[in-house]
Image 1: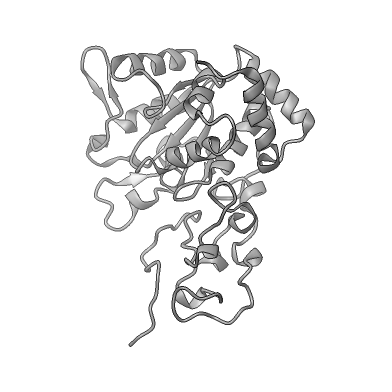
Image 2: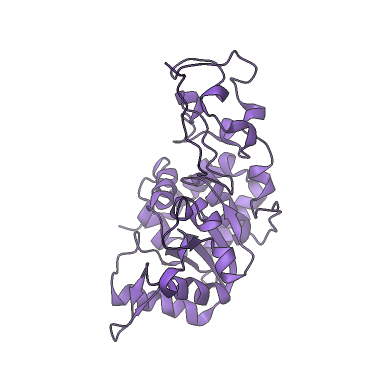
Length: 298
């Protein structure tokens, strides 16, 4: 059964505080979502683990209504998502192509773009003749007609884990491959509130100020360490304590994100509150070559 409009607006109201929306913005968002000509959203998925999709779903599932697929498919003009949409195979491809033919959509990209072997390391779909298209080709083609490109997670924003180490598939960021500016919502995974915030700003027609790495300054202007509740405490030498985790590999002093205030899992906790060092997943250099954790000698 489709979710009622009242319940959907209840969801929007519950999300208002997390998204920073006031009453005027909520009213405008309601009008946009009710407009059949509202921007279409296409979500392509390349080299990654689907973690950002799961994170996004956790955000919506944590508030009434609790059926995220119903919200996305019936109340937001989401034309394609390889995990959420009911169709599969050719019908799913045709839905994406129908939206592509019209252009002017919001393109969300999850996952890095494999460029080795002319992109033949990652295949999102096949057309009606059985001819497969590489993700490299698909993301380049779809980005060209997009009104805005949003990178969900560090893999699409900066290359992330697929591009780490020897990088055998020559994975690259969406911006590096397409040459088109992107709004980067990094994280491994990206925080669902960050992604929803960016999509809402786009739907409302608001500009998004970004830093040199393409990250919204409204979300990524402060260092984790600056607002960490453990700042200034004696440094821990073993995991599980209550002190500063810097000597155990914490990258909070060099990582820009609002995790201390935003928290995760519907504001229940976050990495450092769970006694795990920040591992810098919102930074362009993530994951880097150094270990996430350090243990004292002996």
